Structures are given as structure tokens and as C-alpha cells.
Length: 169
Image (cartoon, rainbow, N blue to C red; front, side):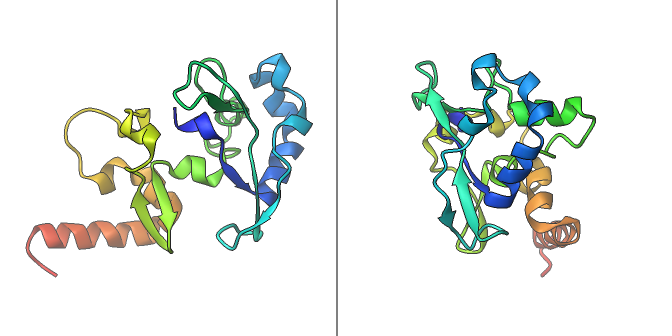
């Protein structure tokens, strides 16, 4: 469900996705294999992106998705073609996946990290909620936080949280 609106991608990363088209195309339905249809073409300046610019993934109609649309890379089996292509190429599963897709449901806001609880899709029960035994959020979303913070800063976060839970500062 979180892929219903597409995502903004760093312009340089979008170029990388285009460069990797031949390994991505086999994982998309035939009607979505035209590389020219993958991005919306509206390049916008944005300092939150490494290259300083972003472009949106194309969205297509999807009456079954609560949003009414889906990202061009979301396959009929609800898997991301970019992630499936990465795994098929024996790479890290996030190798070709846009940064903000990998972070979800964590989001960057005003130079800080937040849980995107207000996102309508999250409220409808997105799979990112990972049901099961109660687990502290910083452990549940470890991969996303390591991506955003780096391993060293994540380890510092864990130490601080554990010290707080023991009553130490």
C-alpha cells in the first residue's frame, strides 16, 4: 500500500536505475518496461537529496489500491520490481531501491527522523508495521535506522536508550 503514491528519487539515483534497466525490465509486466515511462520528468531542486535534485516515479491507475494509483515499479504481486531485480542480481535487496522507499515508515523531517504514523497508508495497516510480539521501535526498525544513521550512530542510539531504560543518563 505504501507504494500507491510513488516516491521522489534523487536525480542521480534515477539515472542509475535507468542505467540498470536491462536487469529491471524482466521483473516488470510487459506494459511497464519502457524506461521513458518510469519517471514523471518533473525535476525539482531539493537540498534533502544528495545531488540537490529529485524526480518522482511515475504512478499508474490502480483501482484495487486505496490510493487509486500505484508506483510504476510495484508489481501485480505487490513486490517492488527494483528490490526483486536487486535480489535476482545477487545484490543487497535495497541496491536499486530508492532511499525513501527503504526508510519507510521512517521519514526525514526538519533534519530529524520520525515515524510516519500520520501517513494515511500507515494508518490503514501497511505491512511495515510487522505484527508480532511487542518490540521497541528502535529494534523493530533497525535496518531502516542503520540506513539513515549509519551503524555507529545507531549503536550510540541503542546505548542511550538502554541507559535511559536502566535509569542512567
